[in-house]
Length: 321
Image (cartoon, rainbow, N blue to C red; front, side, top):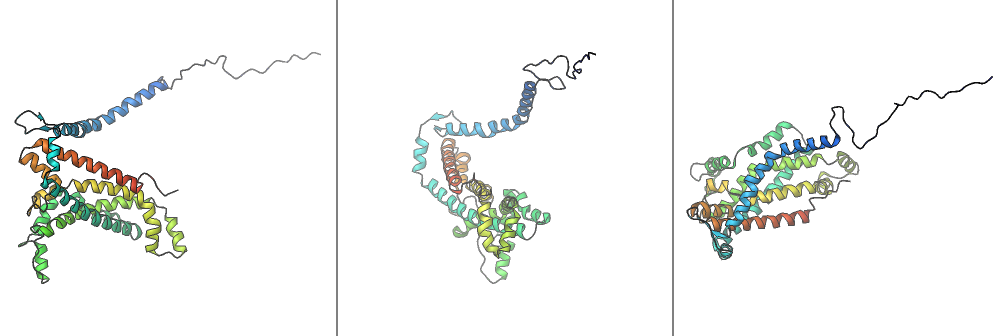
């Protein structure tokens, strides 16, 4: 008997068509989807890009051009080459303003960084209350102008509550904003009061990224809080601290509002910071070319300081494994 055998029926489709193009369920090709995502991304980026070009890139390029001209708004810009920069180098008021600015930056950065770091560590090690974080951040929600006016009233030599307290303690009234010795430290401390909460919360966010098991292991080994701070917290917080320092230095060099509403550069130019001197040259004496040259010089100085800070602090590297 002969048994006829037949192969089992195949479950595969009768024909498989292969090709370089695959389609999704909606009928769009993968390449088409990519182009659609690119268009959508361009739509979201466009407002920010437009704002960057209109309010940052174009004014910067325009300022660089005007720094090589003599321009006062009433007549067309006249090309003068490097005359404005030569004048700036020989301008004693420019160097005095730069010196005042450096003193302000040193006080502001030193006090603000130490205070913000202490607040951040206390928030992270002792409590994580959202209410306390809100209280710490409250001064930052106030504008520089309002903060300056409030502290101008508080520190008024005759009627300010600050000097009333000083007098009640038996001391002579202090002309915080009317004395050459006190003026710049006072302005620096006003801005520290306003910004320290924001800086502390940035550092607090960096502390949150440090694994807690490192502190637990250190406690088991008998390490004190002070030793854990220097051996664990500071090394692992270094990248965040470096970025915060860069941001704070740039912001400190651009101080203007507080000076404008409190001392207006006085007394005797003791608070005539560089930004206020540039403002006076441009909108007080209408020397827009010279003001632009000083602005470009400030841009170069800040770029150099930022580059050096970034390299020295290794802001782009972390010690976390």
